[in-house]
Amino acid sequence: MSGPTSGFSRLTGGPRGLPRLRGALARARYYVREFSGEAAYDRYVAHARSHDPDAAVPTRRDFERARTDAREADPRKGFRCC
Image 1: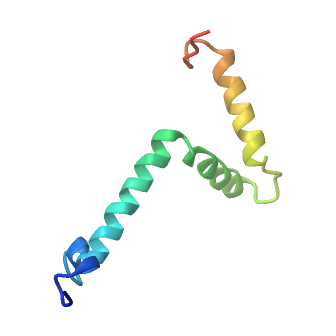
Image 2: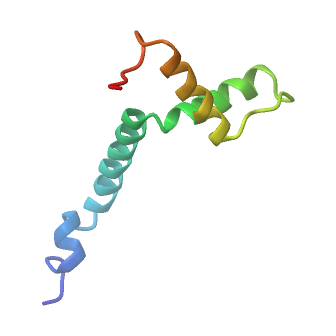
Image 3: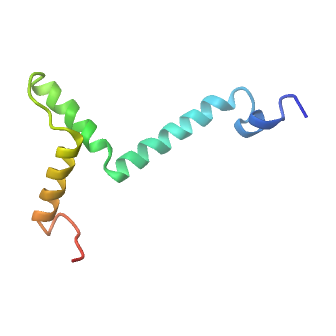
């Protein structure tokens, strides 16, 4: 069938449903990034650039390594089973 009730239109709820779907996906992405800690590096870079634009910013890999080392150094702040 064709028309407003077929395929993608039915999934998004019509022509106005696409922005709602995009908004829902954006919110879900935000929460997943916050929960997983992926957004921490982006916040760190924004903070570092706002305070000193010429400062060297570590790579994501270096940032994550330092973050993991700090978490594992203090058993009160991080959880480690072994």
